Picture 1: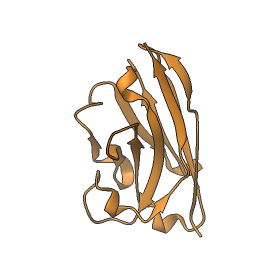
Picture 2 (picture 1 turned 90 degrees about the vertical axis):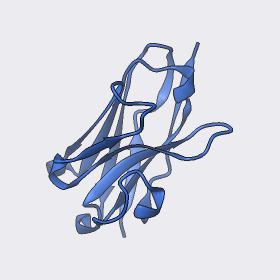
Picture 3 (picture 1 turned 45 degrees about the vertical axis):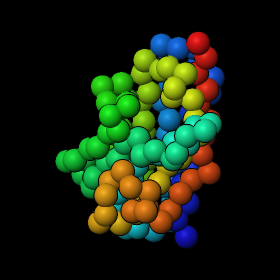
Length: 124
């Protein structure tokens, strides 16, 4: 089975940075497209960023555009999310997700495989 394991979360002050990692294992043919989602207190689950096969296409939520950067190391089967200029509004559990091609990149319904999440907390 496909397994996704996130790491890199933590607590930072506003303006700080974090780098999240997601290591995929199992059948990597089922993880052609990967993305990051987050679910903060009192908020809906939000697609944060997604990465197409080969990295030719990336998608970002408007709320993080210009501050976050998604990247992928295919040799390591690892997805990254660089979070810069963090604000308390970015506080959430961040989830790595993966799936085959097809569907909206920032639509959670496009992703059958999910990690258990890593917590990001940003203080004022």
